Image 1 (tube, one colour):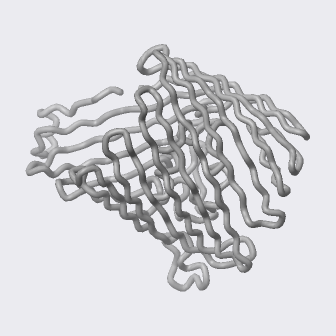
Image 2 (cartoon, rainbow, N blue to C red):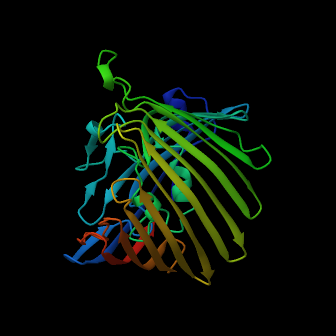
Image 3 (spheres, rainbow, N blue to C red):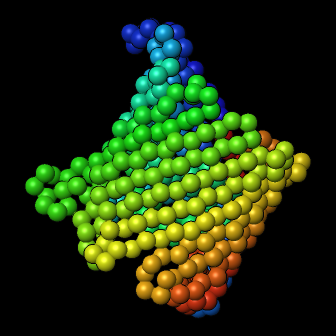
Length: 355
């Protein structure tokens, strides 16, 4: 990471009085060669984000005195294999997807004010329920090894992030307890009928982290008009990790409910870990997700990986994963196509550089 400190002369020229301010440019460039195998068709491709989503970001803080700080965070996803930008969702609904051709700050775009009372953050950021999905996944929900309990989840248009949000984070001095409260809006007109509340919702996360233990409960509920395929989505999950010297054990249980006209639920666990050996790190995970759709489709996944650090910023990696489908599920990996109740496998071989 590279810190670009704003000089006192520039601050004076702009009429600002803060003595300690900074802006940081940061990012990850992660590209890999991918292979996907399925019962119908295989695929070879070059991809981005095998162990960490590629991104370019800018963040800054300003010390306002008396323990008060202001800050901003702008972070854009990048598809390194094609040179395009990531996407965002402007209203937490299927109609809000945009970007993909240029720099779009869809990963995070926030401004905040923080003190010994906590932090208020406004803008676009992770949903409260998503924190447990990536924090307790050894792959951070990146690449072919990502948990099936995330990949197959019934999370609708906002699987990871919410826009138009107001968030409050508890202060870090609560004896290990931490928390997040969140409210976000779909910004529809009041005369939009049954869809006027679409994309509006809220969430919370409460956790405890002390020593080797980290455990958190989180959930969100987002409103959508009820149809045969859509409805209010409620996500609840519990995640935990424990550090045994060089080995970290982690896992969680995840459940979604969609209030369609007939009702639809999905659930699944994950358990995995990371083991550090010198400059290397081994990763392994088992995960599963099943829904109440016709046949009760279920996909079980095993993921194995290794990361070899060439330096603090650069690493080589390889990940292998395999899924087994039942109940009519057709999940496949890395762009392959597989028939119902058949298996699929895939691997990533890549290079990641962070700055």
